Length: 385
Image (spheres, one colour):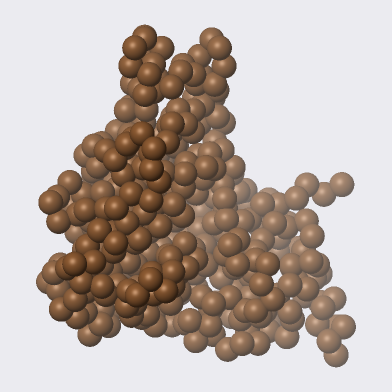
């Protein structure tokens, strides 16, 4: 039986064994399992120390102060807290939000919900490379713009925004800059002060940590006020109530520490794997790159295979774990809204697959994928004749 190949790291990463081992020490009776908010006994203090240690591990790779890290259930909640929490808290200053039409659904759907509340949203259309330019953003800014939300790395294309250049435009217009960095940690340099980021959403499970845990970086500034979305206990400086999941927080902290230490080496190895796949595809007819690899992280590669249906190709590649786009959009029979948003023609958008590589991808995985693609494409194109 063929061992399945996992090339869907952009959807989720496996938990690094070192992360799992750290988490296991905060679950069982002989570990630090206590409620970190229980300050009346030693076990509670020790759990709190573990949480605060992880807070620093998450803060350090992005150049933040640990006190600026607010724990959430994931980047989706962090996006919701950033957009809804900020717009509601600052509605007296202005009701205009700027974002792009190819953001993650956690931003797109939250922005649409804000529109239903009476806020105004400007939806920017990025270029074919999946990036919004500073000039585009400058043209969209208004006197009542209070927040701009643009992702660091696109989850379907891998395209990287010039965050510092965009932040300069945002701040010149008197607004606040939110960045969804779920796909960015360990893959591109992040420094919230140098890049001018005021709010940043972070995820555990995109960086070899556990699912169900994330964080929002909130700059310590009188200008950054958020209205809480979850109430009950006033945890996380009143921004996010709820008993903290110590084991998941410890896992996210360890994952971020590993990303900081090993991210460059990971990306160099992954670049070689991506290039191996592209070299192997060089002889294939009708292969189009939706990802502009000159401005993208190496671990995400979106390709269109002319003359086949993406869903049919996915089914033919039953031993290769891939996706036709974001996991949040995988139930839709429509082409990816991200690909449509950058102008990919509908037939090619429907024939596209996202390949995403990671820490545990091997050269053998790439070779097995190329072999499977050869047979799948030959079979599907023969049927189409």
